[in-house]
Image (cartoon, rainbow, N blue to C red; front, side, top):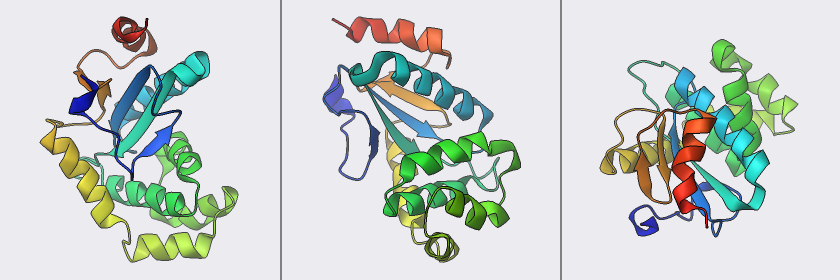
Length: 173
């Protein structure tokens, strides 16, 4: 059923798209449950290695999280500099204290061009990309984050490592 949810050329992929298990996760960087899902998938990636591919997509819930769209745009700006995943991880790690004023220092800490990142975020250079990601999620029936798809099929269970592993087992030969 992988055909339902194709990996797009502009997706952020960690692992091989040919992995036995491809997980697409719609995230909101200010969502506590998304942070828990992020940790679970990071642990699974370490355990499963090349068997697992994780695709990160944006679904900022701006009605609940005032900086969600800004954080997603920041991740995209870092991605334009070749460092999406480091920013992605940092945004979840700093979730509780995230605010726009910390972006230049965060960019520098990650080895990014802080001025360029700040300029991109200020002029909202990646707003349309983030909106397109969220719109694509809505088209697939995503109504909140986190929403996870395993090999193209929506997963509606608990977002903890054990529950996700149980759901993945039917895809493992």
